[in-house]
Every structure is written in structure tokens, then in C-alpha cells.
Image (cartoon, rainbow, N blue to C red; front, side, top):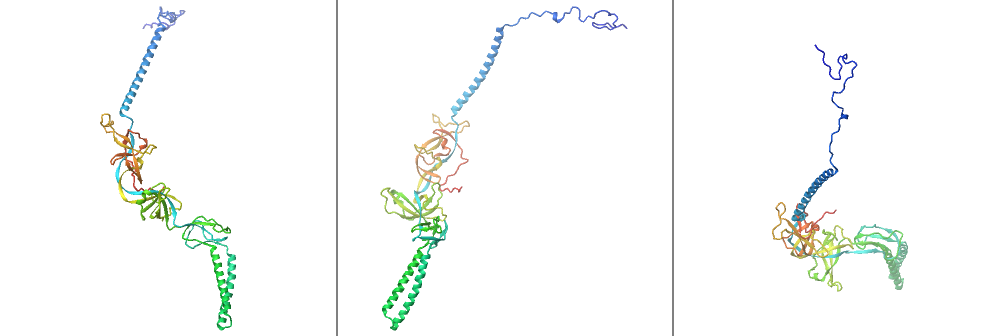
Length: 430
């Protein structure tokens, strides 16, 4: 078997190649460092600038196209919104209807007690005892305070002793005159002395009684204004006493209303704000004379205030019910928009284009708009107000949300949640 032939760079035997240098590179092959560089022609600077400019133009053109598409969409949206109009305002509505109202007369009234005095002392003296506290309810004749009566009581004891002696002398004189042992003139003198002492006794008892302050009638006392040991001159205030039996209501009405007034007509006392009556009663008296300055007539009503909510001097509103009834066009008070130039309401009507055709929304439903209508209002009753001019029965008016509307504004009616007005509301006390 023959020996393998050694390739380049190998020395299998080692003997044949001793002393010879191993050739590491093939014959005829040059090193990379000895190979000459190829003659490549590089592009000039203007070609580079042209390429960069074309790239920038393509980028700017793309961005401009995108922005133009966005602007086109916005313009389309704007045209569609302009064609559709502003968004509709959500409101509540109600139909104006005729109601039968009883006639009423209202006036500003003043609460007056049937009996009211400032309890005071009649004679001077020092307060020795007090029998009441502020705010007590007292009966007629009940003792409220007592002044010092020690001097009067001492004088009373002296007069009583002398009176007993005068009584004995008078009895003795009567017996002696009957037997003829005494002249009748002495009997007359003894009678005069006895009656004089009896009169002095009554005067002292009356003086003591005047120093006892009593309630002139049943009622409720105010704040106590005296203390024990205080010196009171005649007429010093001790406390206010107001009767609790009934209450008067005094008010004035124009002379034009005099023909509507009669004794016994029902009257209600209403608070300054609110419609729940505080008390009810009837007309008690009508002044026959009309005030020449104000051209008004004074009226007094008697009220039964069982709950004790009326106090003398209180300001209330008097409402008189007239027997006749009449029809009015009534709307909710919340539908009225008050302004310095007049009162108005918003009437809901179908929206129409220039040709008179109904305007439809995106779903094909007719659109509605609000039209501002000026009105002349009449009297108010509960949550309603009467409209004397400007609204006809059957018209739909905005009852909630009118403050955000303008004439011709588009509206969307939503009556799912709506407060129901009442002629005689009774709100809960909160």
C-alpha cells in the first residue's frame, strides 16, 4: 500500500522535507495587501442633495395630504352641523288649561290679640313677693305680684281695734237711750264714730288690695320685668299679658273692593312665603269710613289659632275667599320667565323650513322649537298663575328649563320626570 501524498503545509513523513521551508501560500496567489484597489467612481455632492430633497418633498406631500383629508372631514362635519342646527335643549312641558278658580282678595295684614295689656302696679311700693315666671299662662284674677303692705296692715289692726270699741259704745248707747238714761245726741255721736271707723277700715283694705297685682284676664305672660325688693313707682311695667282666646287680623283693602266684602266671609292667614295657611277665620268688622288719604277701608277678621302659630305684631298675608267662581287659563309658575321688560313664557311648536315644511331630525322625527311669548299675568294660586293675555288653552309651554332657552331654539321634550303643580300644595316642613 503506497504512502499518502502530503499536501501543502503538511509533512507526513518529515524525512523528505527536512531542511526545506514549508510554503504557506499557493503559488501564483497574492496577498490582499498586494491586490490593487478597484477604480470605483463616487457620486458628486449635488446628486446627494437631490436625493435628500426628493425624500423631503415626498414626506411633506404625504403630511399635507393627511392634513388636507382631516380638514376636509372637519369641513364636512361643520356643514352637516350647520345644516342640522344647534343641539336641542332638553325641557319639561305642560299644556295650558282652563281651571275654575274662586275669586280671592289678598292684603298685607297685622296680627293683633283680642286682649293685650302691659300689667303694671297702681300705687308705689317695694316688691315683696312674685307669683309668676316669664311665659306662664295665668287665669283671670290670679295674683302676679305683691308690694310691701306692712304699714297698711298695722294701720288696719289699729282701726279694727278702735272699731270694736266703737261697736261696744254704740251697743251701750242704744240700751241707755231705750231706758232713758242717755240723751239721743250721744247715740248719734257714737253712730258717727262707728261708721267713720268702718269707712277707714274699708279704705285700708282697699289700699292693701291695690298693692296686690292680679291678672285682668286669662292669657299668656311675657318676660318678667321686676324683681323682689325693687321699688316700683305707679305704672311701672311688670309683664305683658296677651289673651289666648282668639286673634284679630287687621288689614286694609282698596275702596274698589268694598262692594265684595261682607261680614262672615272666610279669611285665611298665610305666611310671608308659602301657601300653607297658618289659621282660618271670618271677617268680624268692616270700617264704614274710607280713609281719605289712602282711599282704603280697614277690615278686621277673627281667627282661631289653636296651634298658637300667630303672635301679636306678626306680619302675614290675608286671603279672602269670594263666593263667585270664574275660569282662567292657568300655567305652572315655573314656566314664567321674569325680566325687567316683561314676563314671558316659551311655547313649544313644530320647527319648519323656509318653505313651511316640517324639519326632520336624523331619525326622521319632526323637530320642535321654543317660541318666546310675552304674557300678562293675573293672580297666583298655589303652584299656578293665571294668564290673562298671551296664551290660549291647549298650547304647550315649557315648565322646566326655560332659563336656558332663546327664541327659536330647538328643544327636546322629556316629561319622564316632572313635578306636578297643585292649587293647594301642602309641602312638608323641613
